[in-house]
Structures are given as C-alpha cells and as structure tokens.
Image (cartoon, rainbow, N blue to C red; front, side, top):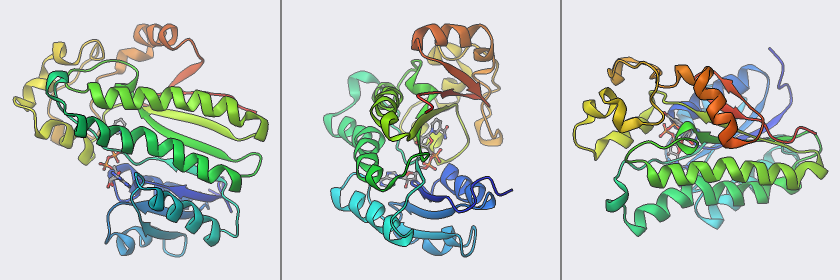
Length: 263
Ligand SMILES: NC(=O)c1ccc[n+]([C@@H]2O[C@H](COP(=O)([O-])OP(=O)(O)OC[C@H]3O[C@@H](n4cnc5c(N)ncnc54)[C@H](O)[C@@H]3O)[C@@H](O)[C@H]2O)c1
C-alpha cells in the first residue's frame, strides 16, 4: 500500500465528508499530507486521521491570503516540493435559476471555480515534472439538474478549466485531471436540499433531475451512501455524454472521470 510513498500532497476541503476519506486514503498509500479547510478548529480531528502523516491549516480558498497560506505553508512543510494538489473543497446551492442572487452566484463561483484556478496557479511553480493536479468536478457540471444552475455552471467550469490547465501544463509534464462525482452522502447534498421545498419529491421525481436521472433510485437519501442516479450512464447515457464532451473520458465508480493530457 505504498503507491503514494513520499508524495507531498495538498488536500483541500479536508474537513468535509470526502476530504476526510481522501486524507485517510492518501495517508494509507504513504503520502505526506498538508490538509486544509475553512473550518477553524479541525486540526486535532484531521491530524488524528493518520497521526504523523497530516498537518492541518485552516484557510479560506477564496481569499488571496488563504491561497498563499496553503501553498506556501505546504511548500515550507515539504521542503519546497509539492507532488499532488487535490482540489476537493466546494459549496453547493439549491436554488431555482430565477431566485439565485448575485451574492450567491459569486460565492459558489469563488469557492468552486475561481479558487481552483488561483490555488493551482500558485502551486505549480513548486510542482516538478510527473506531479499531478486533481480537480473535483461533478456530474452536475456535465448534465443539467433542476435548482442547480449556479453550481452546475461552476463545476462545468472546473471540467473545462481542467482541460485548459492540462494543455498549458503539459510542457511541464504535470498531469491535470478532473473527477466528476455523482451524489455521495456527505453534508453537501443535504445543503443542496435544505432551502428547497419538497425535498423527498426532488429525489423521487425523475423529471426534477432530468436529463441526469435515467437510472433507478429509491429516494431514501439518508440511508444511502450513494444515490444510484447514474447507473445507465455506464451504457447508453455514457455514450451520449462522450459525444457531448468530445474528449476522452471514462466512467469511474458512480461518477465520470475526465481524462486529460497525460504526458
Ligand atoms: N457529495 C456529493 O454528492 C458530491 C457530488 C459531486 C461533487 N462533489 C464535490 O466533492 C467535493 C467534496 O465535497 P463533499 O461531498 O465532501 O462535501 P462537504 O460539504 O462535506 O465538503 C466540502 C468542504 O469544502 C470546504 N469549504 C467550503 N468553502 C470553503 C472555503 N471558502 N475555503 C476552504 N474550504 C471550504 C467546507 O468547509 C467542507 O469541509 C466538492 O468539490 C463537491 O462539489 C460532491
């Protein structure tokens, strides 16, 4: 289990549902981790996930000083070399298109898209050939779902940004990939639902998730680890997505992984 042995890794959104899992999994493979999240008091909990392998720093990725603190802090902790940047942080908004405010749009786009651009931009000078940037997109950034237009636009932006970064960074032999996840039972989908009326109806009504929802799902969100909305994207829907993206990609787990330039 040493596939990441000695790899100096930044993991953002580390105090979130998937961030904690990523910290454990990267550490189990031998990575050294500089973990960060906006949560101020998470150091003890996150560092305890893999004692000795993780250093935690609270920082806001939407603030230039937060970006500097994360990248410069990691670079210092790692002796100047960063091998992996795992851009996992994110926020969601469950709001109809006509009700979304300018402030809400800005918040979602600052956290989900703009920060990925500038965090990566600051990290790259410390990343040697062979290093890797992984951006967390979303199936919601590839296909439309109701009440998700601002988040979808940001995560679709992450998918496209990934391609642009991959091309621009190929001469440095830095790989850039995005993972477009499907629904996973972390705080995020509950945050999506919290301001929407008829929460159960949203998951039980295929029409509300069209065109993404073409597979089965039982609507019982709280007891499911993953909602099985995207089963059929492995088959017919997958080919439709492939045409839509006009780039190579493959289905990973219940989500979609966008493969980019692989020097
Ligand atoms: N859970 C899902 O169903 C799902 C589906 C598709 C994609 N994703 C993506 O997966 C990633 C991880 O999400 P999750 O499911 O673990 O959700 P989560 O809400 O548990 O974690 C997100 C983390 O990002 C952090 N964060 C938010 N704003 C920040 C800021 N300004 N600065 C620093 N950190 C900030 C939060 O504090 C939180 O810990 C996100 O990018 C999300 O968009 C999640």
